[in-house]
Amino acid sequence: MIHVPSIGYIFYINHMKLEPYLSTKIWGWEKWNLSCHPDGKSKIENGPYKGMYFADIVDNPESFPILIKIINSKSRLSIQVHPDDEYARIFEKDNGKSECWYILDAGENGTLVVGLKEKLSRHEIHGLIDAGVLESYLNTIDIASGDFIYIPTGTIHTINAGIRLIEVQQSSNVTYRLYDWGRPRELHIEKSLDVIDYEASAVCGKVDSFQRLKTPHFTVEKLCTKRSYEGHTEDKFHSYTVAEGSGHLVDEYGNVVELSAEDTIFIPEYMSYTIFGDMTLIKAYGY
Image (cartoon, rainbow, N blue to C red; front, side):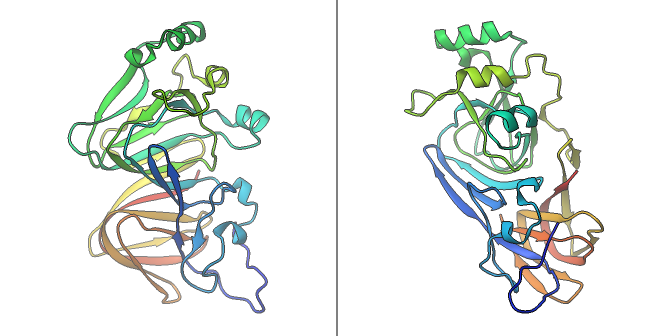
């Protein structure tokens, strides 16, 4: 997964705190905390590779399984849907985009859209879009800080205004917009209709009492540290994003990195480490 760039002499591979790529949007902003995607690469903030793009030290960055974001919605996002791997690779030369959200702040009476209120056919959804009444058929759910929501490919969804969240997704930048509240951006009606999961075959929505979610593409866990937590990566990398609190991580070589809210750290394969502090962490790694 990780290779050592040729910079004159060899370093061991240590943990990496990441500097996000900031993407401003018409509705707010995204920080791409951990990203190998060419549309927004995060940088390494510490250690011998400080200042380099994370993608530059990863073997086959186009196959890296996850992308981690912090999303802040000042206004609501478009009504949208993401394709699966097969469709995205044929038509967009990118990966599909399953994703999940850990809610950091929902304000008062926060809501999201996840799916439709009832099963509808392609023809029926097209008719609702043409009539301008699709919004009435959207399934809106109440959310609060600490909730966890899973959005598999083919699920119509949006993030409403006033939400801040951690998103773990496949490494992809493919979004098809069905409706955008009158804003002057391109819509993708036919492609959206191509990729919607009309049978709602995948379970989506809020995950009650979330501790761990394993998807076909990645695994996400919630970890609450009290004083200290010891880990080892074995044959899979680990990443941690701080949802709440602060602390620090010490790897097996004695290297220390400070952690605070919304930081993301990457730990390569076959490394032992200890996390100190009182924190809520979102751990994500390949399937």
